[in-house]
Length: 180
Length: 329
Image (cartoon, rainbow over all chains, first blue to last red; front, side, top):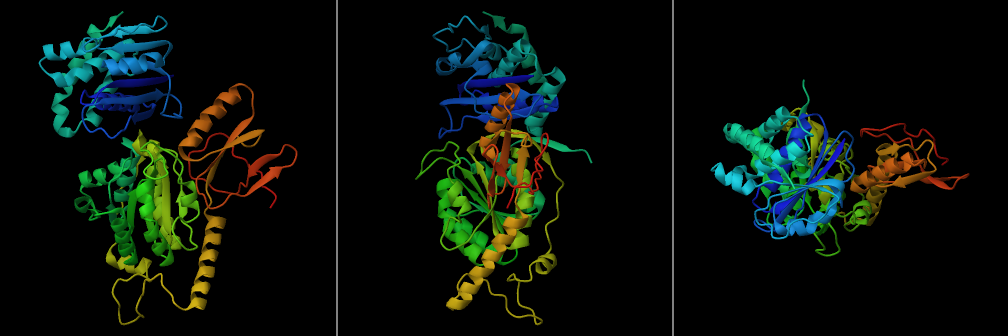
């Protein structure tokens, strides 16, 4: 099994940390991992994306042109990455801020109202965990208990009390993801 | 003891490795894509953890000269930069090589020439292998292809640096520096005491005692014949390093009709290509040089395939069979 994922959105949406939590979860499950951020001169704001590869085999390059799963969280990322989903692959997006819906017919497209759900939960910061939940529902490549361990390893100790809230957000994402 | 596995960027792994190795000092100056090295150090507060000094210098030139000073005292000192900043360190490296001091330097290569780009590249190959600064000198160059090797090569690098009293370069790139992979972390080593430093480095400027002559660290000798003698000595040292310290990884070379030769990040791409080509029935192998001192190629006469001389040791995780064929000298 090899799953090649890109998560793309605005800086500050938790794109990189979501990728890190996913990667750590894969690591806890005993898999080979690569996590590669797009690094540029921007400090905050601007677009941000991260490639995560979870595999049974040694990972070759973390720089890819096509992905099994593309997660887009803003319109710029949709414009840039819709075409990079492998035929038969998966596209997950949050419609909040999306003005042009995806048009491809040869891929599986899922929608998750993560921004709305996070605001309903009263905590914008769990936005990325709702998206992660949606991903894990559609592509169940990592077992739930490893996700929890992944959270434990990637969050600093002082934030460990927030793990139950994050797990709740992940469950929310799993429940609310919709196939288009 | 259970293995400690962590997910780390290459830049973070190298900093953690230096702390765990028991290094004495790091002097740095930020530049993309290697700023995480000093950021990680600062976050870890090594002065508390092991007593290691970490300092942000006022420039790259200052940083390498601080390494020069620390190394002269027998300290295990390191610095890091990325291509344009690493060019600035060349003068200092030449002095350190001329004074025969051990140190560890890291170049997380980005594209050039000039300020170039902040994206990864392998374009500092010639600078790294031909010395880089003025005068006839060579660095010992180690090229990691994974975050794990970024970690592992710190120990190997420092050990080689002290063994040969020569600067060691870890030649990485923006991908390996920025990418997170899993890393197996080794145990914390205790930093050497001053007595141990004096014992290990009798040449160092650790304070003159009654029972020995002054130790003088310099790269200057105005007597031409002595300088010539010194250059001959250096050549001898580099020859020994070439003979004894060559490392490479050879994969599927035994039956290969074709071999890729690539180091670092590029070797990972070639490995994937090799796997895909093998599935289609092409006998393809890969040679991954880890040290760069020497290429000794020969041609396999029947097929005209360059063949890597293969008495070299490797410490990397090896896959499949390694070639045991000895090339004609």
